[in-house]
Length: 264
Image 1 (cartoon, rainbow, N blue to C red):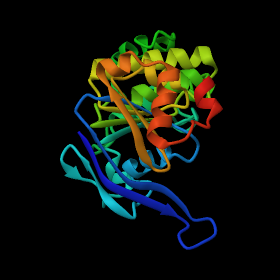
Image 2 (image 1 turned 135 degrees about the horizontal axis):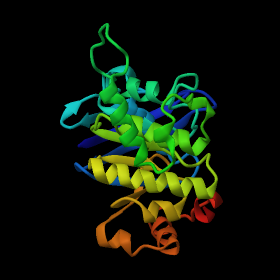
Image 3 (image 1 turned 120 degrees about the vertical axis):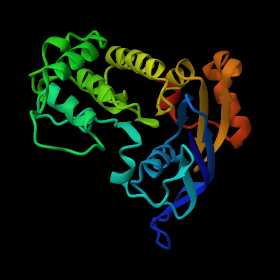
Image 4 (image 1 turned 180 degrees about the horizontal axis):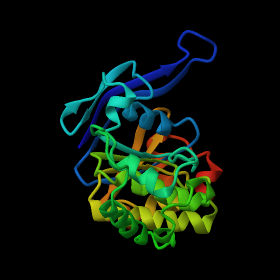
């Protein structure tokens, strides 16, 4: 479903602030893979996601989505293939619009618009059923402004919006990092349900090693712009944090320097 070939990206080339963010990166995701991504600050995790989304244009290499080369496409043209949830709960929704209006916008993403009633009765019923699955009591608050919701509720709504049209790839960029531990656990539980039910190919960046091990069927670790660890299946299921730290040390030749990732 996703194929990244020899992707490289350097920011501020030729200056004192030159930074090699991606170094000849290659990665393949099969249809239905749920891959967690972890690494220290500056490892290239978010740069990789932004390259996939079209935020950054790579210096070289290519990105194929379901066999189609999307490398030259701008961000807005990739939006119909991708769903994305950001770290900041405020970024995925329109705060001054109702919950049902946000969901309606997401449903119409990438489709032609016409002059007709904005939200039909059938759509309202559909949105209520979707929201009920979150188990957050939002199904009775369709007309509430999204800005009145908590951070966890907003992220849950954003997840629904991102997954609504069954995107070819779902990108989760540390989408629980701004939440308290209890709320983060709830959002991750909802994430698992949505990804499993929709059989969505998913790439999830996390700052928490425990979460990286606990969720998904595959785990990759990044360092200095490339992948140094790639585990899946039974090997991933048996992993512990000490195991993962040792794998990182063996592959990169140095110890993991992110207390945030280690301690969670």
